[in-house]
Length: 196
Image 1 (tube, rainbow, N blue to C red):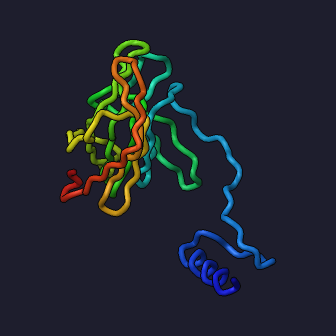
Image 2 (cartoon, rainbow, N blue to C red; image 1 turned 120 degrees about the vertical axis):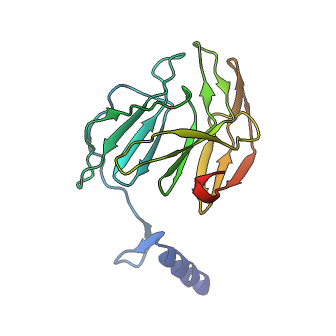
């Protein structure tokens, strides 16, 4: 038993998952207290957010049913971690989405699935995957359609590991009917130039 504990301690210590206090007891890293920083330009929910170096972005979302947004907000991170005022990018996203997912790799950002809701109470899932490239000035000049998800999905989760993107679960909405939940996990490989 002692050998197993020592082995686990070495593994966790190597990967930085835990720290050892003065008592010799393993303890998980803790999160500091929350503080306020600059509020968004408007209330928003069901959006995605992502980070790219000096910038934090908010894309899409909605405040009320049937009023999905295609706007992209950007804020600059100050050295102390606070955020500057939010600005709206001049290039809008090609669709007004809620319940979409995002992942990043280097300067590339991927927006996966989600739902369009042209009128209140009528969301329909999408399988579209978009690729944008964040420029040094924080702009995203264009979005290109990539290989889509195998089915229309919203409310799933996405994660990137190395050169692979995984889309997990989610649900299918059709004109407000749904969701039909999914247990599927899909994977795509990132190619040259960030394409899928």
